[in-house]
Structures are given as C-alpha cells and as structure tokens.
Image (cartoon, rainbow, N blue to C red):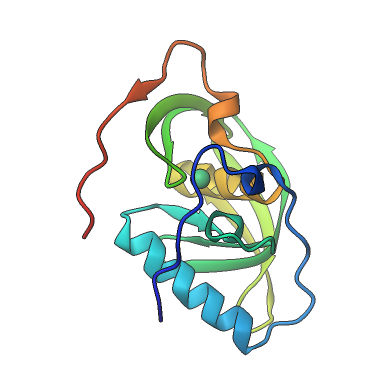
Length: 155
Ligand code: NI
C-alpha cells in the first residue's frame, strides 16, 4: 500500500466528473487500498478517487468501506452539519445535508449493495458522491459559516 498525493483547492481536476468503473481488477483494488491508507494518514472521514487524481467513480469512507459506482437513490430530511474536506485542509463550514440517504454501490468483491445511511455516514456519502460529480462542499456552504483552522498533525 502507498500514500497517494492529494489534490488541493484550485486544482481543476476537482471540478471534473469521474467515470463509471467497468472492471474490478487488481489496479482498482490497489487504488482502494491506497485511498484508505491516505484517508487514515490525513485523518479524513472519506476520500474520492478524484482527490488523488483518478477520475473513477470510487470512494472510501472511514470504516473502512469502499463504494464503487455509488448512486444515491433517495434522501430524507435535512441536517445542518460541520464539514471539511482533505482537499481544503484549512477550511471548515456548515452545510445542509440529508439526515438519511439510501444508496447503492458495488463493493470490492463485485457485489451490488443497497444501504440506508444516517447522520455522519449519510453526510459522508453525499460529500464523496458530490466529488464524483465534480462538486466540492465549499460551493454549497451556508453563507458566513466558513472558518479557517490550522490542520491537525498527521498521524
Ligand atoms: Ni472532500
């Protein structure tokens, strides 16, 4: 496993739409392992492949869970939550996210899974799926809530 280089604010790749994954091969498994390791190293809650420069529809969420070609089928409710992103290491703000999300994804063994997620997991899925669509949280924050905080030390 290896730590991948993160892409940060201002990098045009973060605005690009990621492509569907058609084959689950060794290269994808390595990417997933590296993404998990990178997420943990920087104390992240989730990471999308685009954040390590790969435009493929795969995300990891602390657990860890890997979601290939994730799709949000249904959302319910609204919650105001604090959010940050490994691509915006100093910036934190409040955003509105659903309280509950029904999503579907392929796991790393190729099995299609349906999941009903709440609270932090619902928030994380929404945040990471946004990345796959070229959207970043900073563009949807509640005005006036942006704070600059020095990042905590790496593990
Ligand atoms: Ni992010």
